[in-house]
Length: 416
Image (spheres, rainbow, N blue to C red):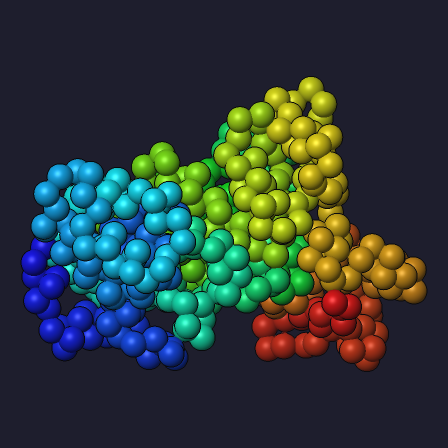
């Protein structure tokens, strides 16, 4: 533990360098170390930790935690950390109960563990993103003192900019109806350039990620444990596919186990990263309702897909609708409207202008993935000869573009 106090700036910069990979930032490397270390020292969403970082800075507050843990006389002693917080004029210091916070943090302030987080991340190509970085999602700042100090990010994609992501969440024990709706929503949103965010779990989450991957789009899987671990293990192949164009992200460092409480705490990250949250299927005690609650508290719009009135897996969705806290979602246009984009009337006006065959071919194509003429014919239900003619007409109108490996729909201009 004392090694954290005696580490030189050069030592800390070396640890940080392995997980930064040229990330443009206004942050001092020592503060980056402090933020990343805090992500493992404090439990997810620990408001006392957030208040300490805000009042004293990440590096100084971490050093004071180490000093306080090493010199405490009793479990009721807030140590030098408490004294410095009072001196800094931090409000509600008593409410933070720093003596209890130090007891929570003490088992995690171990030099070997902290260094291990950085070494493991470096070996796996995991990067650390912190507030002040160009790629930091500023929407997370809406969480206040409950915001994560850092994100551990694995994969080739980017984190969604504010308003460009939609969370598609729901039951693990999903029905075939729920999985089909989740796939249709995820695919349609991906084709429109919206990043699908979910939790990587079985059922609705997995189907949302799977459909985005099949569309060749980036998707974000927010993990309850470290990003070094593919969890659940049955999603190994899916999460590897997510990493190609998207990312796995966690507020906890590598080596963190996905304990039960972390699944609820990570739901606030899913909600904060997203411009809207859509619940596809949820029972009365579903964790997806917790995500919807976080979204409502953050001012994010919530959409709910209705289900059969006889289905227990839709009972939570129907309760949300009855509460008036969520909007009814029956298709992609409803979700886009939640984001403040193109609404149903605009979409319907565009459709009214188009011949039926153009609409069928348009729906068969993607804005992100090239599809062959044969694939467009199979998906549209038209003959190959008819599809060739329609594609030529659409190309002339600027609705599609011909690419080396097939056709791609051009995105239509949207409002908002």
